[in-house]
Length: 219
Image (cartoon, rainbow, N blue to C red; front, side, top):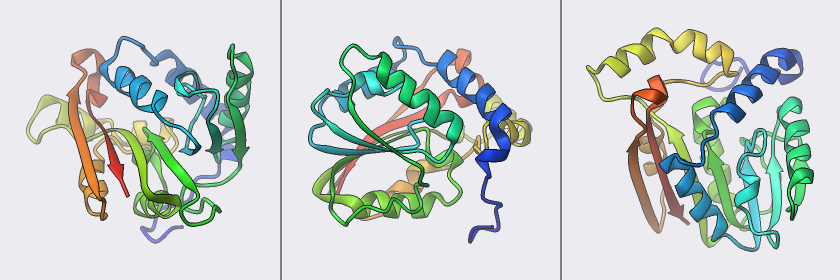
């Protein structure tokens, strides 16, 4: 268990569930989404040494410049397999180093990275506060964290009630993901030289993950 009393997920024992999760994540990847438009623009601007935390099946790989040196921190073996295959399938693959690590312990030197990318990550992290601490630690001064998270719906709304009702099955299906995580408050609790965030409502088609935040935080 971690310091929150949560069991640390054993991905090796959840291969079948992880394969279903990977298929669902790929199916939900829509270039027309305002969230994906943000990712495409923000990631394309990155250069130098980049760490992506929990890259999953590699849906962000197509947005990177081929000149980027990318370290992918991915503890799930099913996702690592999909990630490597996705990079090989690119017309111009990224220089990719996939590491079997967790975001809570990145094992890189302080200030190593020019940027860190974390999309739909904190909601499912075993220890989200430690993940942000690590992301900030490995960023050089002036380095940028690019983030996307689905968040809790406004209190009293139908979506908020749906999030509460589906909390347990969603947590089971998506390997610990929490439907009502307040990622913005957690991110703001750290010291940044600048912090920019935008709230996006994807509409009813996104059901209970319709409320998302996108933004950047600069160390």
